[in-house]
Amino acid sequence: MRTTKSSLIVLSLLVVFTMILTACGPKTPPATEAPTQPPEVTGKLLMLDWAGYELPEFWMDFAQKYPKVNVEFSFLTESAEAYAKLQSGFEADLVHPCNNYWKIMVDDGLVQPIDTSKLSHWKDVNPALAAQGAFDGKQYWVPWDWGFESLLVRQDLVEKVPESWADLWDPQYAGHIALVDGGEANHVITALALGFEPWSTTPEQDEQIKQKLLELMPNVLSIWSSQSELDQMVASGDVWVGSGAWNQSYIGLLKDGYDVVYIDPKEGRTGYLCGFAIPSTSKNYDLALAMIDAYLAPDAQAYLANEYGMGIVNTAAISLVDPETVKLLSLEDQNVISRTVWYKYITPEQRESWTNTWSEVKTAK
Image (cartoon, rainbow, N blue to C red):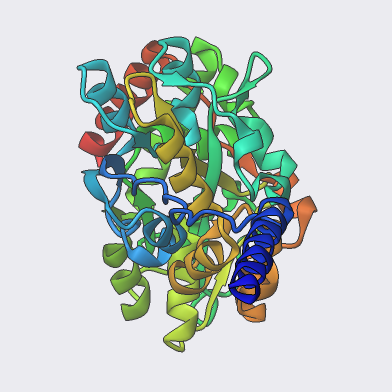
């Protein structure tokens, strides 16, 4: 009996001691739930863009980051169409015209400023090209693609390769010239040939430009409106000098084995610069920024240069471009870029005047 009681007392003391140790010991953390992942972004992003630039190679980064976002494209045929569509109330999240329409779209409040601090590739964008997209101290446009317009020459068929826009009027090329079908383009090159500043010509100078074009027309074989049309005429040998030719034609014909040269006229090549802006009506600002950043990625820009023969803006992408293409496009030659006569904004009155002049000239051919 005594032994049993003593055992009970010892057992009780052990239980109490165990309870004290348990109370004072480290706590076992309660089971926790796995952290919740942010919901995947869904919705739609509509781009007003040129046909051919919708390829997934240009926006792979965006597709990987936002796989549930439905990206749709509405295609442009000219920059004027982008302006007209936004004016009429067309709602898009990104628009991609060229720089002769940038200012008027900013002035009319059709696009909104871009927060470049949210673009990871902005630091690598060529500053000289980026500056063309800034108005009143704000960045409205992110440049993306550019190209030259110049004289494309079959040097195996001419006695002397032209060195100037004014050489178009040389009789040795008579009957073998192709002019681009555009009032603005032909106004600009003729102004350069006459020594005028193309975007500030007076009425008297405009009349001289018209007469100079009329003087040229008897020597013109054809007026071209598509790259493939010009390429075929140059390849056949019917056209010796193609005016207003794009650098894509030069690179393509070279690859096909034709003996062509792309002139850097003493007055400078004319050039166009195109880029992205976010329309004021867009409700997907952050997604639009992410898409711009994807298009600026080095792989996307290198694809543009290697496959399309276009100029690019991301300097970090140049190392990924075929060295021959870099050389042909002068991608690393800042002097060539600075000498380029970039298209500028023109007023509706100028556009109407130059278009009417060109219509008269074509009719007189």
